[in-house]
Every structure is written in C-alpha cells, then in structure tokens.
Image 1 (cartoon, rainbow, N blue to C red):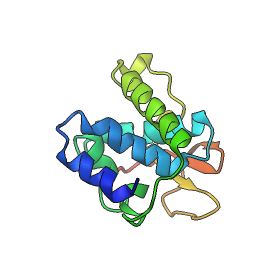
Image 2 (image 1 turned 30 degrees about the vertical axis):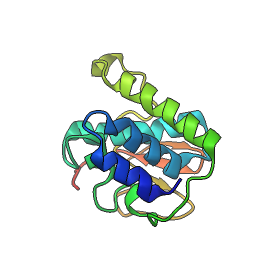
Image 3 (image 1 turned 45 degrees about the vertical axis):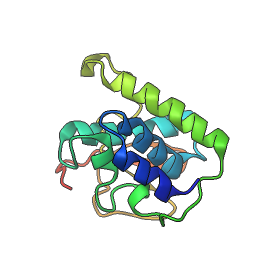
Image 4 (image 1 turned 30 degrees about the horizontal axis):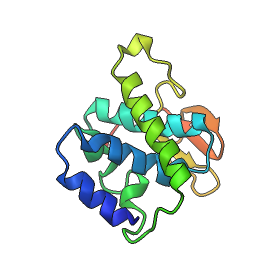
Length: 148
C-alpha cells in the first residue's frame, strides 16, 4: 500500500479512530527496523508531543505537523511493503496509546521526558543537548523549550 493512501484514510476517518493509523504509520516509517523498545520509544515521543498540545491536539495532527515525523518527510508515493513490520507497528501503536491513557505516574516509559529523536547516523540536530537514551540507531532527547 502507498503512504498517500494511508494519509488519505487518516484524513477521512473520524477522531479518535484515525489516531492509531497515524501512529502506526509513524512507527513503521521511523522505526520498523528497530527493536520493540525502539518502536515504543518513537510512539512515546509522538504521544508526549500530542499531550503537550504544541504540535496538535490529536496524534494525527501531531505526527502530520510539517516536517516533524516521517509521514510528512517521505514521498507520498512510498510503498509500505513489509506486512509483518506493519502488523508489529500497529500492535505497538495500540498498546502505546492504551499505556498513555494511564495517569503519568503509572506509565512504563521507555524514554522519560523525551520529546524528540533523531537517527544519529543521519543528522546531528542543534537542539540535541539533553540526551535521554540511545535505542538502536535512534537517539532520544528532552528538549527544554518545546516548540513546533
């Protein structure tokens, strides 16, 4: 299936039904080749940003904010070919959203406080000054001044 189809579907589905689809696409595109912990960490960053409200009030708004996550960076014609990775990403997306509904003190966070991440072999962002964790080939950061 093409990314454009996923984005179209997310656009026509009502909220909150669209959110797991947007989160699944983000996990798949950002971390399908990472461990489950790495994929959960990517989901956690997206959910933490949504909770902040700075990038949007829904998961879809947050992950589709201009050039913040892979769904807005990767060409819409990109084909999502790995069905097993998609199923894993979906499982993690649903589980992560369930976990995020718990009170903050009860969540089992992978990257506490992390609001950003980067594939450390691709970029060296200027805002990367408060490292939280390195999982696979992603570095996760707490950014003091959250801003879209």
